[in-house]
Amino acid sequence: MLKIYERKCLVCKDKFTPKNSTQIVCSPSCAVEYMKKQNAKNWKQEKKEIKIKLMSKSDYLNILQKVFNTYIRQRDKLKPCISCGKNLGKTFHAGHFFSVGAYPNLRFNENNVHGQCVECNLHKHGNVKEYDLRLQNVISDKEYNELLEMRHKPLKLSVDDVKELIAIYKQKIKELK
Image 1 (cartoon, rainbow, N blue to C red):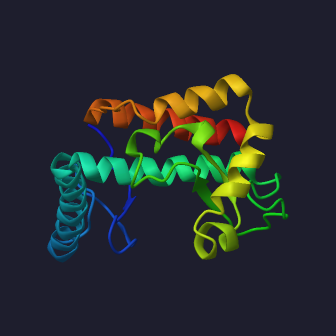
Image 2 (cartoon, rainbow, N blue to C red):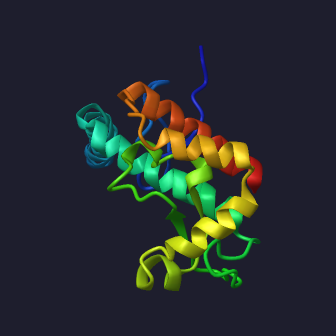
């Protein structure tokens, strides 16, 4: 005959002697409480899965934009502002040379986005003239000319492409840390 040892109740933490080997709680009231917790956990997981299924391409693009901007900030944190040359400090933006509104195809181009102080990005509307002068010193002539050519080429990203870019930039962030 098997000897059944005392256990600790998963809900109230009191010790009890189970009536069978699968009993994990000490009383019916603890069993009800345990089931409520399990249902809450299951609901949270289901809700998370439903949210992911309902995400649109624009939701994924917003996530990619945040991850991409984080990568740019990590990459450029020790560099000066691309427009004015001042020290970036703790708070700075991922400033686009060609704006996202006018050139959405260059939104995630690393040569088009650099660390930019808040003053230049917001108050001076990107300080584009200075950005252009300094950008030519930061990237090669070939990359600069490719950037100028790419601004007129459309970029079509599928949801899977966006998910892949999210994973790529998350990995790049890990490598920079």
